[in-house]
Length: 410
Image 1 (tube, helix red, strand yellow):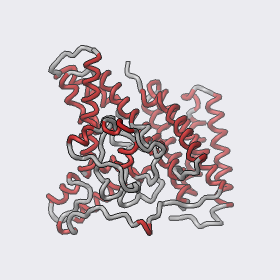
Image 2: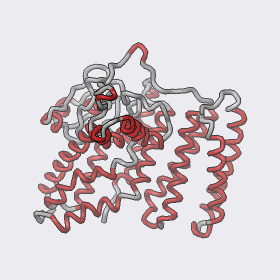
Image 3: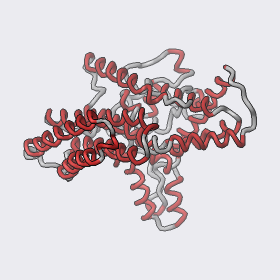
Image 4: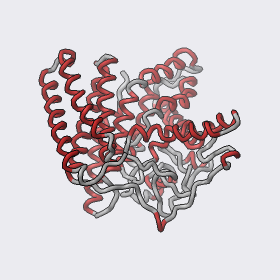
C-alpha cells in the first residue's frame, strides 16, 4: 500500500511552525510576517491539490519501468534501503541543480524561492507543477530495480527531512555541517546575494555539493528571495509569472534558435540582440526593502478566516480524494484555489476582488445547495452554507467600511 507520508505529516508541520513562531515572538525576532506566511502556506496547499491530479500517473510511470525494464531483482534488505537512500539523495541533487540552471525548470522551482523571509512556512512554499517533471530524474533507480514503494517512501522522507532546515533559529550544528544539509547550508541556498546564488543544492547530504563544486559556506548576511522580487501575494501569479517573462523574451527574440534557447538556457540568459547575459545584481543594502503593507485588523481576521476554510478544504481533499470521483475532486479543488486567491488579492487590496469574492461566495452556496444530494451529508452542507453566508456579510462590511479609507489597487 502506498502511504502519503507528506499528508500525514501536515499536523506536525503546523505544530513545529507554531513552536518557531512562539519562539520568535518571545525573542522579539522578526522572522514572520502575516502576509508572507499566508502566501507561503497557500502555495503549499495549492501544491498538494494540483499534485492529486498527477501523483498516481507519476507513480505508475516509475512502476512501469520497474516492472518491464528493470535490470536486477533486488531484495528488501537494510543495505538495499541504505543504497536507495543514497541514490534518491544523489538524483535529488541533480534534479535540484538543473532546476536552477535550466529556465524551463526554474520557471516551476522559482516559487520555492520567492519568499523574502526564511522560516518553516517557506518549506511548504512549493511549486504547483514541479512534481510533474521531477520524477523523470529518478527513473534510473527504477531501471536498476529499486522497488516503487521503497522509492516513494524514501523520496517522501527526503522531502520531510528538508522541512526543518528552513529556519533561522539554529545557527550551526558542529561536525554535522560536514555531512548533512543543515539550516546554515540551506539559508545560503535561499540567498539572493550573488555569491550565494546556485549554491548548496543538497537534499539530505551536503556531500554532493562538495563533490561537484556547488558548496558555499554561510558567511555574510543572507538576503532572501529572488533577484527580481515577485511583489505579489497572488498564488496563481506566483506559479506563472516567470513563464510569462520567458514568453515575452522569446517573442522579442529575432532568431528561432534564440527563442528556443530562452527556455533551455540558465536564468539571466538573454540573446545578444536583447543585451546578452545579465548577472545577478549586488544587494543595495542602503535601499533594501521587503515587499510589505499595513492592514486593518478586520482584513487580517477575514484573510485568516478564509485561509482556515481553504486549509480545511485542502486537508479534506488530501485524505478523502481516493473516495471522490474526478468531477467532485475538481470542483472542490477549484473552490480551494479560489479561496486562496481571495486571501492573496485581499492582502494586495485588489479592485477586482470586490466582484470576484461575492461571486465566489454566493456561487459556492448555490452550487452546494443544488448538488447537496451528491454530498450526502446534511450537517456538512448546512455548515458549509452557514460559513459562506457569514463570509458574504463579513466581506460586504469590509468593502464598505475599509475600502473607502484606502483606495484599492488595480
